[in-house]
Length: 272
Image (cartoon, rainbow, N blue to C red):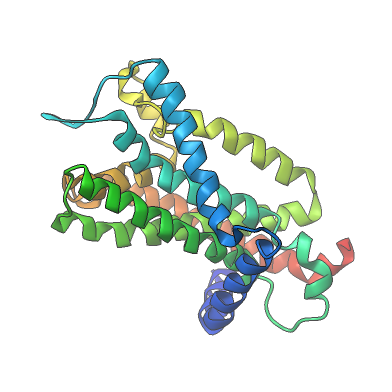
């Protein structure tokens, strides 16, 4: 618990630094491209179009029933989940290698290492806001108008931040000690794309498979995003048992991540 409080305190005290360095990192990463930061949006848009073409057009996917009595086109259903998946995937991957790729810089800087994964996450958050804005606009043009339920998107963005940071705290620590962890995480996340309700509905499976797949906390976040965008209800209230499970997982991951991070970070420079 002491380690967790230390990490939280460091995030709060260095919040301005996190935002400043994350924006600088995003700009520097794309400074040599003609289109600059536009590539941060172009790449996920291309991915969405490819998945829509493969899973929607070629296979002639029927409309998806998001709630009883409400069916939506596959492309809109895909957008509602993929915009969250892109943020989670990129943030987790960048967060996992955030410390060991900056060890030389960290040896000369004077700020806590626990803020480094958050810098990587924040650099992806700006792109996520742009993609979410584009998705929101497309939904309005398609007749899925904003409702009061859209306010819960703030809650789910915060929940995504918490889950991603907790995972990144663990993987960034382990990746610094054992570099293979990052490669294993990358392969695992690619597999998880097909085990999450991003490209297909897990409700078409027979029990107990849907219940088992719902243990993945991403299911909670993705369905929450879709509930907010389509205005189908207050997902985190209507599924309050699932909300308790999700936050239980996040807290356990964070406590574990904070403990190993604080324990090993004094030795990180030795891995240069």
